[in-house]
Length: 519
Image (cartoon, rainbow, N blue to C red; front, side, top):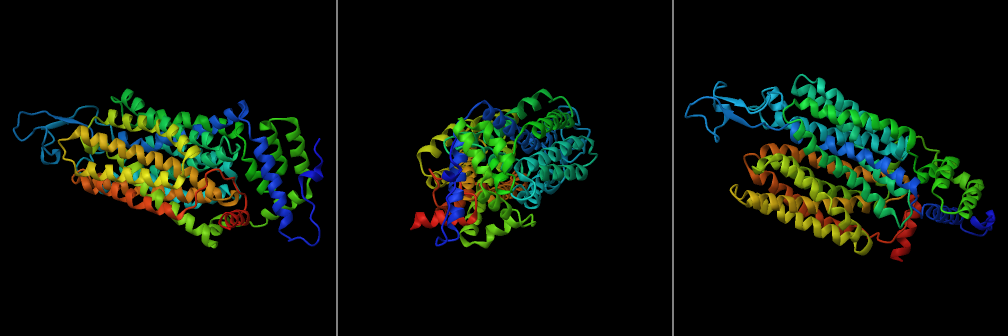
């Protein structure tokens, strides 16, 4: 068994008072890295259970592509005024009819086909606005009182129950209200999943495990065309029923079988629980002995107790803006998130404006996300985060602008450009998400990632509105999306590269690490 005194440095009186905690933290970080270095079956199971939350998040995020769409229609009279290019708002109701059941989407169910773009775009915007509000209200709780796991459970329950309640909506206003609540619920899912995944494994496995969050989100996105196709003759309510019930059942597995992040447990004075979690992933008995010695160390107990003195749930958010370096990084990643989100959400939501088959176009977008994941892994392991994000943002922007300029008759060219722009935005989002986790310490990591996510979701509020307007002017949708991501990409120059670095736990430690690099 390892000697406890060999794990924790015993300072003399003449040393800097910060030195003991520095050495203590180095021991803590090293042992956590050693215990998480392997990736056994327990780690695999935990990672899959956590990542499943992103699958249900993906279905709720893009479900409005089908439930809020304007269905196809046909003429029912021999009137010369009625043809395929006619505006149904100018026709008599006796001259045309929907191709399917009148309750196929909310547009046909509540006769919104002639309503303003504000009304038709309100449900989607409400969902994303709920994500913005929920992120600011709940995001910091994962760093303070609730932790990563409990906030993830609460978020999944809120999202799935609100999605189920949506089927009882009787008009667009109630429907939008339920979508807003569902958006609040899903606001913290992706950030909690990503942080929980990356904090549970060592440096070697961090990029590979972190990518699981994006992969499962894509599976949810990809499942939508299949679910919608098999329910194409049914009401839009069937889609919410098929997606919400499995999500509610999943919440039970999440609550009983998923473990909390050991790093968060240590930082919040719950060392025994952290040791229990780490022991299950420890690769050897000597490491378990070191974990026991670490738990008994009085210095660690003092550090953990000190970190829990503040009862302010928004302490981590305040810390992000209290230090100049942290505030600069936070603002930069928020700008990047907004620009990337304009394309990532705007492109799939607006595929109906391209005149292409809605089932195939959504499926193509979802399928195109899959090759972005191995590409992201290669980039994270071999190349610079900064220049990779910049490159993908620029290419995505150029493709988006060209897509807006190409004429409506060039449907194939437009869909290819849309897919290229979407693929680059997806890859850029993968990179900046994992980049952000590495840029901030444990004490504020979830809050920083949440702010990135909220700027991302805020862009979806604007993009969903632009999609409604873009039905008559292509540049007001795809053109604006392209310009936004192109300009935002240049802001990555203000961030340091984190390739090959370790995760820090406190703000002071992160600052010392940066000073050592610069010095």
